[in-house]
Image (cartoon, rainbow, N blue to C red; front, side, top):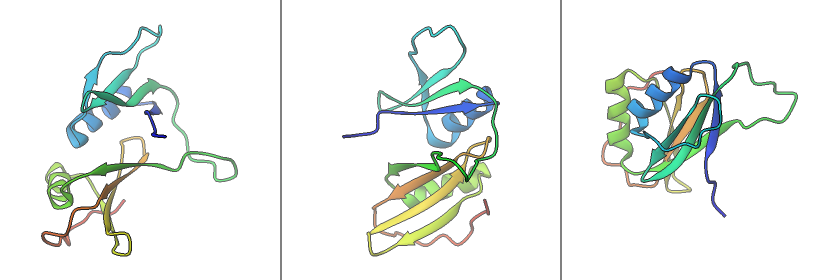
Length: 131
């Protein structure tokens, strides 16, 4: 079983689209005519994120909610450099017992994205912004 896509309901449809295009390199692709605005953002020919308009709000820790989305990528140091060059704050996490390293970023609306890497360390980055 694989996750097919994640839908982000956002008060800033255009800003979230631009962020995901610029930061993650996703591209707008075909989307059925649902009768309301939105975007499907693609990676490698597959729709990964669906964006739809809606009111944002704080996460209610009393009820169930999706906390974050994890994306598996290659080239952790390349991504850290890219995020820093774009001025995107990120926080690292090292999990040597899993052979993984992670970078955490937030969309303009505050959704947490976890970028997961299994590639070996090429060099250590110490300059990270705070989320």
